[in-house]
Image (cartoon, rainbow, N blue to C red; front, side, top):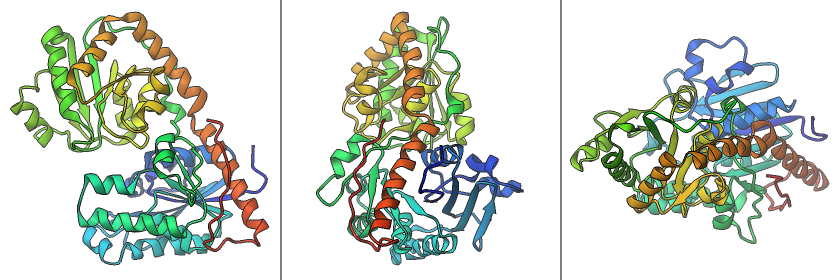
Length: 417
């Protein structure tokens, strides 16, 4: 159902053109490789279009394919693409001003009803500077990232985040965990969770595996936060008990063959039965993950955790951290996944063993996980929640005299999710 006020939505964010290709005309092969990522945002955009509104995207790319601004168009989608300087030190020197100014220019050229900027950095600054009604969606905590990665680049990002919080007008988050970490009298933060692409919803749940049990992890980087060492140690225990009946594949940047992750596994005698699969394009990754039996997510902290919902949608029972940021909330506090202390490899091992040996539990979790995602996290459903929030912000801006100019206005809203 088309909203009353929001007719043309602007999205300022990293995106991936290939995920939006069906909405664009006359794409060349090189266009499909453009973008900086943003899986959840791509899914929200598809959901907004499915809800019948027009969407404009203001984004950036750092490949050599883009040397000047590019505009791609379709019946309901327009994508403005600028250049993202490939060297971090160049972006740092002017506090990402070059990138933010491009976003601002695209918005002023396009004239949307509202701009939803994702992440609280250069895309958000461009949206704020445009003076159009805007919503800033927080997807991480800059202070936590700086704590884990103490370097000048993250310090600059931290100050960008502070500037956005100081000058922005309307904000939301994708999890209760982020809401609790960031909410203050200055920031009212309604929660709208990340969506799952309906195409990934399995038509039927999985039967308990009778042959080799295939375990999978999808992790973004080899780091203490992602905690792959404990996953590997837990699988080593599992392998000692079940032998060739269990296997473990890890996907993601930092987990290719000859990577630091594989070297660590070899040095710590944790490589038996493990394959390091590296990075895949998201559609290809999901096509691979659907053939596994169990999803293991050992991360110590997540601001959301898309992989969790995607695993549930595909029918995979999930083992994840009981204190890992947003993870317990995403998994319905243990109703839709086994939550354990992921800093203890023995606890991970015991949870995996439970799924391997308990067919009733396994099949119940598989069936209930698909239903849980279908009822709460589809792209069209989450997009409808955003549309309701956009309308409230636009109505507020109209009552204040058309366009807001960087004044802090709180828009109360509670997501039905």
